[in-house]
Amino acid sequence: ETGVTQTPRHLVMGMTNKKSLKCEQHLGHNAMYWYKQSAKKPLELMFVYSLEERVENNSVPSRFSPECPNSSHLFLHLHTLQPEDSALYLCASSREGVRAGGTGELFFGEGSRLTVL
Amino acid sequence: AQSVTQLGSHVSVSEGALVLLRCNYSSSVPPYLFWYVQYPNQGLQLLLKYTTGATLVKGINGFEAEFKKSETSFHLTKPSAHMSDAAEYFCAVRYSGSARQLTFGSGTQLTVLP
Image: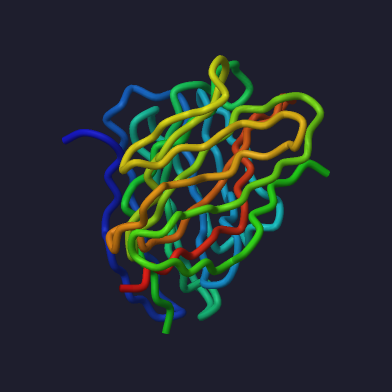
């Protein structure tokens, strides 16, 4: 496989469930990202892992928990979510670390469509 | 605060007509500039990017964009729209600074009418 792969593509969960989204990049990149895309709203950067450093958006609720075991894999653990958390969750990677030089070009996965009932 | 502005959240054109999607950024220092396209239920795909050099940048699917420093703009154009161009388009900018992440515009939904 090439590029950035996200699983599952679709997920329906209840508010009391615990689930995880998975992202894998096959590009040899040094940084990985989680974005949230809700209808009628701009892309929201949730978390960045860059060379094992985590950079996060302080407005992200604690019910979202990222994990980056190595430079190729990124998880988003979900628990006790709310209906307003329903959205498309996009994973991306970039060649450079966040604080390095370079263009910062992002390579996106296909997204995981999450529905919280 | 540094920002990216896309004028027009919805743009409709007829098939075969010129496509013009507008993007303005706020910085006195030329940043890196990108256009991404998103088809329904898919991720974002890079259309084109400006880093350095020639200010007119050609991308995939017949799109191009021109970096105009004096106008702080990076508008996306295509001479003749095709039905398959219907999608959402995002302008993104990377500014210099300690946290060099991309800043995205709010997106423009392009509709192509038959």
